[in-house]
Image (cartoon, rainbow, N blue to C red; front, side, top):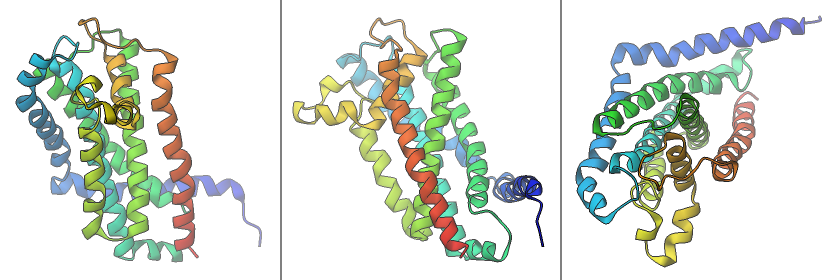
Length: 269
């Protein structure tokens, strides 16, 4: 019997639509999306309130600490969404749902794409809330509309990269109880040892190379360049400045997409 290959794509799209609704509709009904709103509020208050006066006195070179700090709030919102994505992936694997898909004609990456769709909705809500919180404390987009769109696009790409990596980790470990502990420390460590909260010159000399070049610092620098500032010390947006962030994002996708394919192909055997 011959099968028409033209019908495979619509089938995959329908499968993605149905499985994607499974991750979004319950979140709407249970109030889970409320955490996507509360998390950026907590991050903004937790960073800004205790550090505003201290860092304003120490000096960041920016017109306000809110303008300097805002990229880290964005990155923490992305990390929080990623941890939630890892928990859902681990839950699906531990509950046997992935094994149930083996009896169905579902392509290996369809469940991943469906979970990513639900995470993308949560990510957009978190990012919108983070920008609104930043506006409340004084953050502003100081450049033109193209730079503003670049800020939002880069934030979304970073969040999607984090989410995909977390989904892979959750699927691989298959332990909802431990996945939050595994992924909870890296955002805290990299966030504290980055230029997200303080300029690199305020760190000890021996750790400055790590602080300057690690991905969170690179992302924060690129986001500041897109946002702009009136203080005169905001970095100019150049290809050389943006390249490390794009390389990190591309590297995450280049590694995680084949691994996700492998994990889901193995579960479909």
